[in-house]
Structures are given as C-alpha cells and as structure tokens.
Image 1 (cartoon, rainbow, N blue to C red):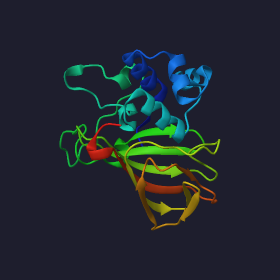
Image 2 (cartoon, one colour):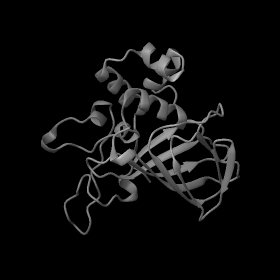
Image 3 (cartoon, rainbow, N blue to C red):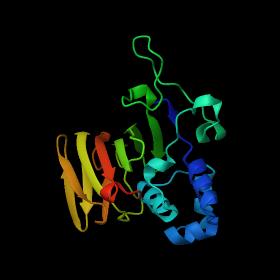
Length: 216
C-alpha cells in the first residue's frame, strides 16, 4: 500500500501565499467560490481532477509541484513534515541504505493524492528538472474528473494506458470507451473529461508532459 496520502490543501495554500495571491483572487480566476477554495485548503474537501488542474494553472505550477518531497538531507524540515505528515524512508534493497527519490519507486514509496469523486493518483516517479506527471490513476465506479460534467483544458500532451476496468474519455463532443489494453493520447488543450461508467475500478498509467518539457 502507498505510504501516505498527501495534504493537498496545505500545498495549494502555501503556493498561493508564496505567489501573493489572495483566496478571493484565486477563486475568481478558477470560477469557484472563496468558501470552496478555503475548504480545499483546510482539507475539508478534495478538489476534482478538473478543479485541481484549474488551480495549478492559475497558480502557474505543475501538478507534480503539489506532491510532497522526500525528507531533505541534513535534517531540514520539509513541506510534508511541516504539514504534519509522517515521512517514511525508502525501503532498502538487500540491506542497502535507502535511496530517497531514486530512479526506482516501489509500491510502498509512492506519493498519493485522493481527489473528489473516487479518483486516486499515485506518483510513479519523478526526474528532477522535468515537468511531467507520471501517474497510476484509479477511478472508482461512478468516479469522474468533474462531478459537474465540465470539460477541462490545460497545456501539455496526455498519454494514457488502461490496465483494468472501463473508462470513458470525452474529447470535445466525442466519447471514447477504453477497455483494458486500450491507449489514448491527445493534446491536453483539447476539452476533455474522464468517467468510469463500469462496475469495477478503472486503473491505468497516465503520463502528462508540459510543452517541450516546460513547466505548466
């Protein structure tokens, strides 16, 4: 099982404060109420996939920037520790010392985001300096990227491969039904959404890259 569910709201609030953006200004830019943004930041509710992309776009950061960082060398307190999270060291292999943030990420080392409507993201890896989201995504039955049915758009290119279940991908006005073994790729500025209309969780690997490796 993944080691910890990240305190997403803490990361969003910290980034908003760092950019000097007021809560009302952020709410206005993403078309949501200030009270909803406040509830997300305090952990009282989780954003949907589409809302998360809207917030990160408004803040000028990538989705991977809201994931926590591993424990820093020299005992420096990280954002995750400051948010009250337990930082679990990487699992050593064959007696070797743990390698934090190494090229291999075992199941028990993954950072996790739990989003609205039964959506879970697990980060499968990260290369420092790159601006891509490499994720294992899971949509519970009935889960969707936006409960309101809104299509989302963001910069970059999106690639997905479905491992289990069924997932309906809406690209513009056209729905595409994915079953295990199906793959999808498209420019992320295409209005799109995801919904699991099946009876079992839909699980797949998703890779979202910014344009030419640039930060979203």
